[in-house]
Image 1 (cartoon, rainbow, N blue to C red):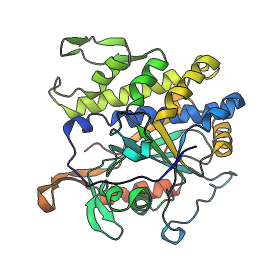
Image 2 (spheres, one colour):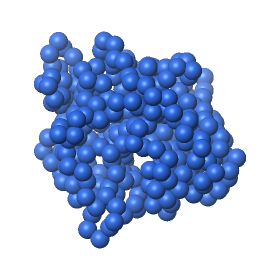
Image 3 (tube, rainbow, N blue to C red):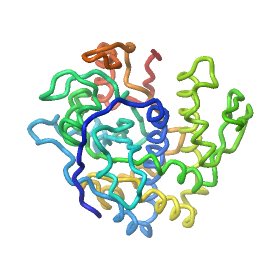
Image 4 (cartoon, rainbow, N blue to C red):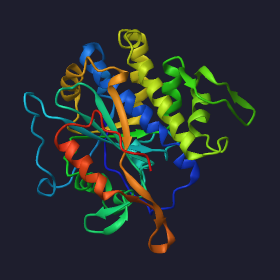
Length: 341
């Protein structure tokens, strides 16, 4: 593995094009689940897992962190929390992912794998969420990368959730198109017909290749409710992608899994503690997880506003966050779905 420490240039405002690409992390997050399961099912691919890049400095000092998670009652293994950071800054895949992570992540998510390994719950944190960053006061959560790199981002998320982050994955957006094509396209049941730049998406079941999938998940201007329909399409694609990957035909097809792993390798970096043996153990314990067992939600918010310098921010719903914290602590996120803002 390549050992790299990320560099963090000055922060800059988020563009609308970057906002539209956040779906990549949902898709690659779902694929991460399949990747772990593949590690548990197929020893023959383990050598390929050594090719993933390693995050050289990933965690804050131990005294700054929550306690190590204990197994839920009646189970031998503790829950596992994986922080997913999505990057859309790298065009040249010959350069390390972490060299171009920059001062921000385009997406921030936490994948929670419960003690009973019955599923995966993926929580998205809006990157403009106005939170406390240790040592720097109130700011957008994404600023943690600029202030202190990946370790400070981990510390900030751990403080927000009062939960320990066990592993980290940095995922490059450019892998999204290739992953879609690697599974032979993804079928979605499109709830509404729309057209974008001469490309039409019919209502009902349609199969999207990589290029079409990018448009499908990015578009918002074709809809009267804008971001709401786009978010719905992103969720739809995530579920459909997971369903495609987590099928017996894919997981037991050596050629297809080989292509998926090789396609992913240039676009993913893990913390140094998330090695082959950890992947193998976690993947084996998750062998019964299928697409219906993956759920997702967004950290509750109360709306948007303006803070210092006129920057647009998203306000966390601190009252509802208490329930999120309690559910993390009790390993009880499977059926959690907060009311949409």
